[in-house]
Image 1 (cartoon, rainbow, N blue to C red):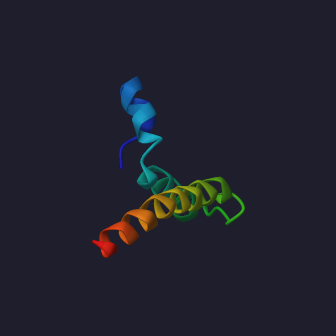
Image 2: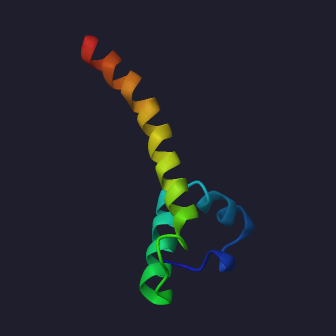
Length: 68
């Protein structure tokens, strides 16, 4: 929503941990710059990697909660 370059330095670093940053960046490139999937492949790979990490964390927690 807001340009990351205009944020304070600590918020710029924090925004790199938020998946929405990469999704919004990819959508902005596609809609405004008419980018292809190859142009946003880095953003897509980061989103997939974050999804895998969160799923790897969530599955054992879900299994543990179901056995109680």
